[in-house]
Length: 231
Image (cartoon, rainbow, N blue to C red; front, side):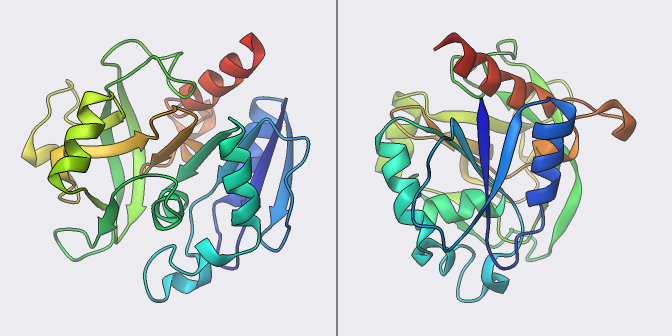
């Protein structure tokens, strides 16, 4: 299988994603410059974290107009798997591929630390290697990560089991104190109704090998690989 990793001006986690996919998990991987107009031969597209276009206007607001995003939308319509991490999640929201929006962190400060998230739905291409209610320790690094959705959208997300991750404490309890950025319902990651697009604020690519002292993030990538191999 082959991963395509998008690169925008300001992307800074593209090489992290490439390293995990190519050198840790031994899958094919290729960088895709944002001016490309077609996506061919890929099973999965990763939209990595960073500061696309310097986060001017709003996070992801300029990146959504890049030529490659038309190809990403076509890839999504054809059922291709897409995972957006941090800034990648923000881009997916701005592009309308996922519902809702992200706001400034409640503290109005940039937050960079390890947090815990609970897997709310392990019946997805991105979480099938996680036990139900599995708690993962992952790092976050963002200033605009407070997920928001209007009441109707939130109700739909809950009804369709589109909330994939929630911020929790180490034991899996969903509490206000475990919410690092003020996200509504402690939401840390969601998918689309079809289940082939995931957006998440934490960084699984930054904790996917033993040398880093934490391999929890590897479960996300192993789930994707397992799903594609089963197809």
